[in-house]
Amino acid sequence: MPRRRTFETSPSPRAAVVALAGASVAAALVAAVTTGSAAPTVACRPAATKTVVTRFLAAFNEGDLRTVNHLFGAIGVFRWYSTTAPGERRGRAAYDRQTLIPYLRRRVRAGERLRLVDFRFTADAPRSLGHMNGTLLRSARGYPVRTFAYKGSADCSGGDPVLVVWSMAGPLG
Image (cartoon, rainbow, N blue to C red):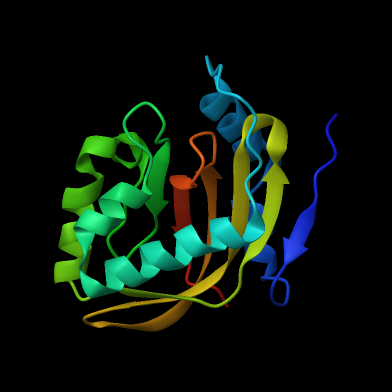
């Protein structure tokens, strides 16, 4: 089994992140992202992966969905974007890349805002993936600021990381 390195840039997120990023979800992600992949191994780096996350959050908060669209993997690489309420996105819809930008447009119109609180990174170099998790602050019109757990994965096989998984669950506490 390849050795994995974990990098922390802030205090550990709450226990809910552990549940969110459970072993069965991680195993499904690895299987889904690597199925049929013959791409050369390119290691995701913590700084580059955190940059794609912060760029996504900033572009989303500004309503710049053109940039958001470029930060997520294309059909065939993208795996899912899921969240609990507000704006729940689960089940079949979460896996549909074609509905991602229309969904995010509705969330921008609802005044949703996301702010990173902490970021943890684990490299999966043999699969050219970078996995991240932590907490973020989430709000929307009529929905006060609450802490949510998030997890995600970036694919680095093309060089610059692109988000292929993003999940948020909460509120915590």
